[in-house]
Image (cartoon, rainbow over all chains, first blue to last red; front, side, top):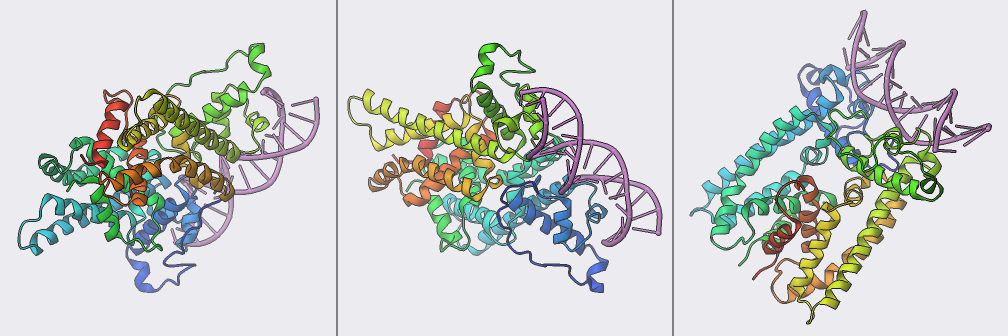
Length: 218
Length: 218
DNA sequence: CCTACCGATCGGTAGG
DNA sequence: CCTACCGATCGGTAGG
């Protein structure tokens, strides 16, 4: 913690040193708790400004114990990112299935984009949303090999968007070339983690509506 | 430097230990050199992953010498950010004056936005463009007081955009509410530092054209 | 601006 | 998972 003025970190879900009930101790819950605690600290203080001692203390462990679960601090960071991507991919698949089943007619490309944007805001700003921001803003700190793995997952995530953008481009509702549109749109959405205040009145629904009106004609 | 795999840093402008000619030594050039060297390292490795020894070495100094010019590492970071904002503001003023003088008729709101976007891409991606990315991506690492100063400068920078966006909203060329449009547009532009490759064929001009077609109707 | 140095903190490990 | 610990590195300073 050489940071000058650390942005105050929201209170942890499990604070202090939790009494270890027998049920908790046996399984891999401690490892998952370590992941979510690390995600929260990495997001709000940054990877390099968060010590493994910070993480251990926030998880109610001693300083050496995180290394029982993860080989190194870098591996813990990568695990946070990978978990974030796998969770985001799962949510994306679920959202698509829900949409296709519930609609009486097939959703329009515009409706599909709306659902994708809404779901992406949920991943970025919703509950349990520390993992993906860490992945987005700490990619410098992982190895090339790890970055390659994440890039593959991100490609899967973005693959769903491309046909939707293509359809909108063909119909004239999206005038920007698809490849650049994807980069610019993701930028607009991803940047929201820098300014969005979940205490504010602005809901993710109205935010999604606004974003769609910015990108799409008619 | 506890980073796992530091993104390779582009070669410094003045590499190694420059011979100190008499002209260089006397004035404040060393301080400015320290600023630009620190901006480059902070941008590519991050603030916390860059040691003051890294900076000193890249500037051809010994480890303690940066502290002759700056009280602390944090003050050096803040100086980089402030210099970036003042330079960006100066470029913005210059661009506006050029436009108003050269056009035979007053530029349309759309033309004004084009100029603002183009100028912002220059600040983010053009030559000597390490300062603003550092300001955008290392704000966690400065004090509240310093952040307040920067927020003021950023407000000045953004103030120029608002009337342009208002005019576009009134004329129906921008359907998104102005306040959110500003946040989303800046996000789309600022995120470009994550993916733009200046080696690529894509020019800042065509990038600007694409961005305008994404945001503006007709 | 350099030399020589300090106290603090950090990631990580051996052994249990 | 804890205890006890190590080597390395870091920001910063006194004195010139």
